[in-house]
Image (cartoon, rainbow, N blue to C red; front, side, top):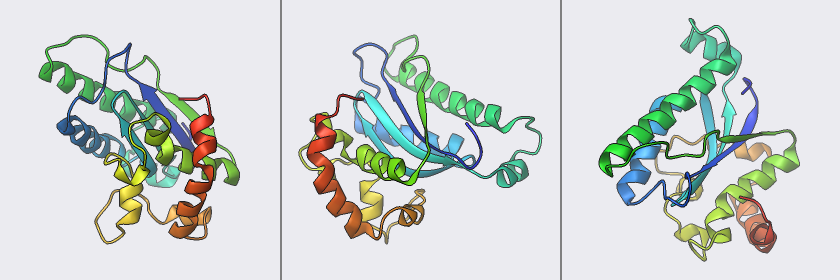
Length: 192
């Protein structure tokens, strides 16, 4: 993962298990995500569902990463290491809490570089519409474990980079309008 590049990241539970069984799992995931990845990533969107998750992130610029992690030789390895630490910490805690063993997530998380403005917009909308697509809720504003609420409630503190999306949309009202327009298209897509 390269400095300055945006990515769509997602992963699924191993087999038919859930990676989130109760509310405290979602909170723990987000707390440890911040602990391990906040210094290397800007988070633009996320959605956590019982058996998988989606993140839309940007790797911080090289100069900032070098200041924060001066001893790391290659920044690509730094980001991978931080993700590895994060997934490992979550899995170990989950395994301990539920008396299970082994990997919780599919072996390698997926990361798709976001290469243009259109793809950035589509990914942002897709991440937020994912719980509707998979039938976890009928209205995305009813899904608690999504960055949608961080954008809807600008007065609340958030770890999201809530300004960057304005490079791709005119306003939050523009996002809401496009979300309604794209809902049926996203639901019909045969992708994770």
